[in-house]
Each structure stands twice: as structure tokens, then as C-alpha cells.
Length: 229
Image (cartoon, rainbow, N blue to C red; front, side, top):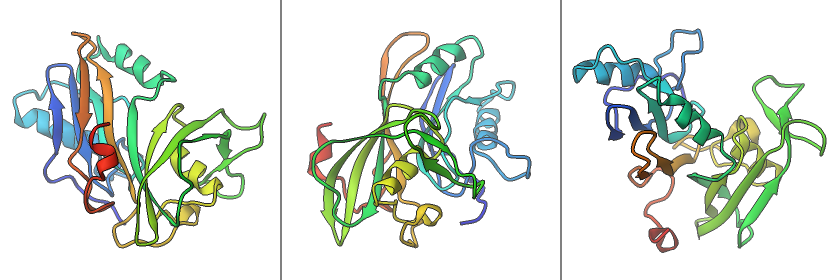
């Protein structure tokens, strides 16, 4: 998929210090030097349109261009370090939905394989042997199976580049739509979505339970196994 401009920002939560939105596919979070439209630009435009033109949003997490879902922005420099610390915490706080081809093994799967750059392709990362790359840990649980595909609930314990994509591909289950890592082609694009996130508000300390609308491009309806989670 090519570059895409955000015509209407889907805001999930917003107050004086924090904004969370649902990123569409085909949009980068930060500027990459090419002049392509960014999610940060869209958030700044939204703030300007609501009388907050002087606020400079700063994304405290990122998603790959074709990944959709929750992205958190700091709107206040004084409280941003608290958000950054939460994002760097080894405690899983964000849940992703991913679709792979085939029947993924049942039960909770802990993937612990270091991740490093692929020396043969600058676009790719790779799962490394112990002692190489950076430590990476991913938790994966299958929640539904239909039409030769499995819907997975995924949580990151660490946050390496392409971590979910690399770890699942290393098990022989690349994401549907992830041709970079050997996944099957998909008219719906890369089937990876940041769905739910728990964040402690940096001012009040209140626990915010954030969630996007159900991503029907990944799976038609929310499986019963996820309704009470």
C-alpha cells in the first residue's frame, strides 16, 4: 500500500496532556524525511482545529506503516517522561490482534528470541541466536480459527522493531499480508492491529482502559473468548 493522508482523525481519548488515536493503515507515525503525511501531522491539525494550535504532540510509541490501531501522544512536556517510562516498562500493557495462515498451536505461547538487523536486507529484522541481537519476548494466544486462518491475541513484553512480525515468522507463522517476512498476500493489507491498552494517567494516576472499535478487516466479529478480557 502507498502513502495515505489522514482525512479524519479517529480520537479514542483526549485531555490536556494526553491524546490516543486509532491509526489507519498506510500512514507513518513520525516524519521520515520524505515529506510523506504523518499521524503526528494529523494530530497537530486536529489540535489546531480545536483551539490548541500551540500544542506540539509527541508520539510516545509507534506502529509500522501498515499496522493499524492505538497510538499514544503526549501533549505536555512536563508529564511526557512518565509516559515514556510506562512504554519502556517490561510489563505487558498493550494487546494486539494478528492473523496468520494455518492452525496455530493452542494455549499460551511465550516466544523469547533475540532480534537484530538482517545484514542482507536493510528493511528486515531477524530472529537471532542467544547472545546476538537484543532480547525480545512476545506472548501469543490463539483465540479463533476459521477459513484456514487463526486470530491471535499478542502482547509485547519488549518493544523491538517488527517484533511481532519477526517472532511469528520465526515459528513458521508469518502474518497474513506481511510479504516482507513471507506472509500470504492479502487485499486487506497487513493483518496486525493494536487493539487494547492500559495506561496510568500521568497526572491523576487513573488507570485508562483504551480500546479501538473492532477491526473487521482482520476478523468479522469479536470472538467470545475476548469479550471478558
